[in-house]
Length: 367
Figure 1 (cartoon, rainbow, N blue to C red):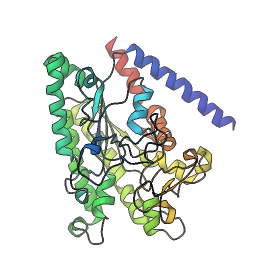
Figure 2: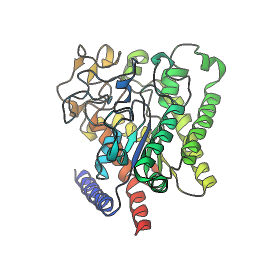
Figure 3: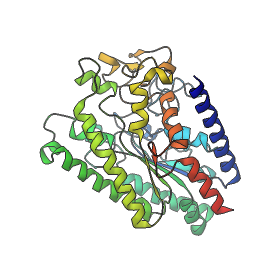
């Protein structure tokens, strides 16, 4: 108990320092790219089945209404914005993203996408990574009309970016069906190498577009989510094959990020180990105040792991004690634990440095 109190005190002081740094620095533009873990409503504007615009999604969001976030409340980008004292970025497709709102940044993410363009094909109309990056180019032109080209490049270079990709390349591609096209083309180790090589191209393109502080997440414990337990588990054990995939992917991703940083001669790409953050509360849920990390709060079937969350799903009365909100996505409380490690975690969770350190360093360079 004393240890938990000390951890809470340390976190409070670190967050206080981070907010002071954020207030002292100029407002920092924030960009988000990726999949459903970070989409905050772009897919609402698309004809796709990968949507979270129905109740009870958003049941704990401030408006108590669904927003397109695959969460009961706030998601990871919201919580990062909250920690650095900024307002949440709007979806790039939102008609409200105009004028001065553009200077806050933009969320380009789209549920269902992966590193590879054929990932998420079953969802049809989603914003794959080439289009997400094209939207950033369009964003730059729009902002340039407001503040001019030179100030736009400065805004981009001083921004913070979050990229979350990879999980769907396994769950919604390689392992989507038995003998999928990709699994026939590649043995798993070779597939991981291929996905990493394609991820590298995406990150280099973002660098070419001017981004200089990029948080890059690996996959979570994809074999332990309720959806996979419902399909593969007999006694609540994680899917060994999907865990093997994540175990191969995440270390190679960090190696690739380290190599990119050496190539560009700066600490541009920061590896975020979401898998480790999640394994912490999955392996010992009680320590973090959860009753279960196996059963989703909202869903149906074994472990509430079948399908997505709908108005007809089973719904838990207390989201604070569930690590997973729906069959695939963490609850807001679990997201807060993940973001805590992004903010102040050791190199086990974020490497080569955490976000508090990044913000402090970048603020000192502007003085």
